[in-house]
Length: 209
Figure 1 (cartoon, rainbow, N blue to C red):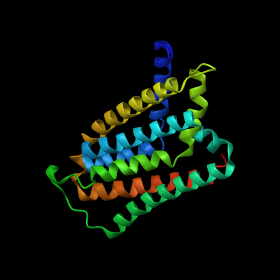
Figure 2: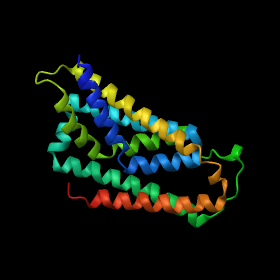
Figure 3: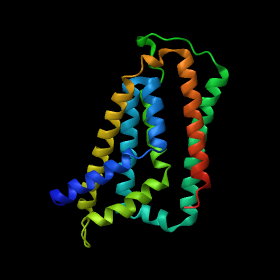
Figure 4: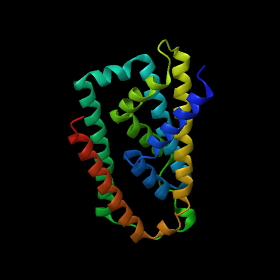
């Protein structure tokens, strides 16, 4: 079992990593604004599940193989970039179609929770930078002859930290939904979020490492 000091230090580093702006941040913002707290929380748990899968995969050696193989890393990176581009283009397509109407508070909820969860999960799993982050981080917090259970402990901590941060984020952003009941504001936000997602997709695809 890892010590309390190690657990708390690891918790702090993971929290800082989760708070760094990136694809998860943009996706969480959009789902929380347009789908409300329910969609935001679902997306948060999707991201957290992705974190759990990455950390456990490190224990199984999968992430190590991914980091060691330039081809595998590139495949996952391009798949992630394509997914971000897909989400961004869809947002742009909504802007092009128009049809945004002013909504009452009760009407704001057009992002199904299952869809938000799936988007959060895929966004995280298709980001190889997450695996590299934890692959570099976790060995610093484990003994040389670490047991699989100790890695699992870190996986649980990372998952809980990620879920807690993003759920809190979802509630904070979701509280602004009344403002986004305006069709004009929602259309502008779709244009902004679509641009950010496409930009992130291009950045991920063109990054050398």
